[in-house]
Amino acid sequence: MKKLAILSITALFALAAFQASAQGQAVRESQMRKKELKSNLKAEKKTLRTLKASEVRATAKTQFVADFGEMPDVKWDRVKSFDVATFTKDGQKMKAYYDSGSKLLGTTTPTTFDNLPAAGQRRLLAKYKGYTVGKVFFFDENEAYENTEDMELFGVPFEHLDHYFVELINGSSRIMVKVTKEGDVSFMAKL
Image (cartoon, rainbow, N blue to C red; front, side, top):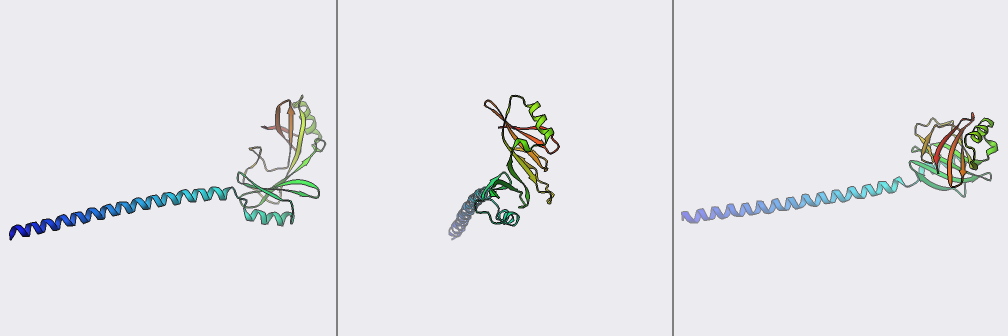
């Protein structure tokens, strides 16, 4: 009888150990599934953030209408953290740049070399002999808004002021220079 009791107790301990082991295995499998689900969720959230980062903000589109009115030919792009609207107003092709808060930073419009400040024309011709003038455009800062984000054109940050940008061409070499309203000329980027 004593042996039977010991065998029964041993069997109970073995059964309890087996159940504990099985429960431990189930817990480990559950934890692994949770980790896998968390990992998948994290990857999906990252993909969603990337997609949203490339989308133009609805608030920028709303602000554009408030700034310029309804424009039938407006095209939107996301360039880094800026929302850029390309449109035609009064027969003039323009671009409007909006920051991450959907505030208008400024606009660009095509212009000509003749519209550059006289001092800028002289300095440009003297400094870049052998180059011909290509496209010229004017960045008109939105003076009503004190912007804290760096404005960039051609991948190069510049001060939030009114500037002219001039493409210069020499054979296969193309560069962009910046001309201030005071006529100062500085290299921007190689194109």
